Each structure stands twice: as structure tokens, then as C-alpha cells.
Image (cartoon, rainbow, N blue to C red; front, top):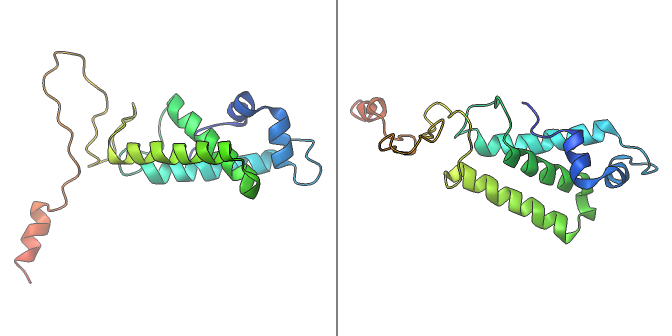
Length: 149
């Protein structure tokens, strides 16, 4: 599993003070990189579980949308029960976006998973018709097995 965001991404979005307060479990003064890394790993696991059926993992390059989602999810995990309503809303919004990605309502510029039914890249205008469909459930092999019972 690769991470979708880094400590630098979190610092740029939320600042050193907030990260130090949430990661340093004793004094709240210094950023504890182990705690941050765990929150980022938890965020990556959530993202992976949402996009694995649609996109090939690990991703070669991380789109900015996934960086933003990973930061929101990691921030939520860092705050635990002390999360403000804004942090909860950002987390829930991130989960909604992941659900849209999982359903195919929102596409990412990533390579498709085997049988995921997602085109690797959107074609230029005039390339012809492109069709996107879900993975087949009733394959010829599966239907052939029904005759054996």
C-alpha cells in the first residue's frame, strides 16, 4: 500500500500547530511523525478499499483529488473523538466522493483494474464512441457450470 498524502501535504493544509497538538500525545508541542504516518496509512487503506475494484493499485501517480481526500481522512483520524463538526463534515464529504468513485459516477485519471470497466484515459473529441460498463457477473464459464448441477 502506498500513501496518498505526506506530512508536507498535511502541513500545507492544516499547519504545524494543529498537527503537533494532535500527534504529540503528551505535550502537544512537537509533531510525532509515527502518529502522522499511522493516520496517513489509515487514510490510504480507506481509499484503497474504495477504489481497488475500479483502479489498478498501487497508483503510479496520485491525483490531487486523492491527496485532498487522504488529508481530510487522516485529519479526522488524528482528532478521534475531539473532531469538530467541520472536520467530521470534511471526512463525510471525502467518503461520499470515494463512494462516487467506487460507483463510477466520478472518474480518476488512473489505470483501470482488470475487469473494472473503466477506461484508462478519456479520448479526445472525435475518437468515436466509448462505452463503460460494470464487470460481468454471469460469465460464460459461470453459466456453463450451472449445467453440471
